[in-house]
Image (tube, rainbow, N blue to C red; front, side, top):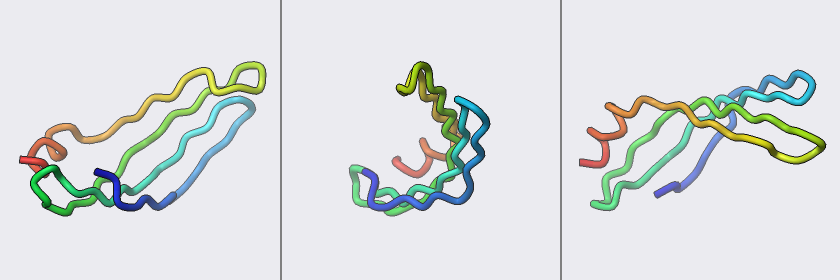
Length: 65
C-alpha cells in the first residue's frame, strides 16, 4: 500500500526518537490517499528495542473503504 513516504521532522534524545512522517498510500481498491503518522523509536544496547506507530484510524478506515 505504501507508494512513498516523506520524513517531515525527527526528534532524537539519547536512545529515543520520534519521527513525524507523511505516507502516500494506495488502497487495495486503487484509491490514492495520504496520511500523517508519528513513529516512536526506542533503542537498547545499540539495537531497535521497540517501535510504535500512531495514526488516525478512523480516517484510514474511510480512505481504504
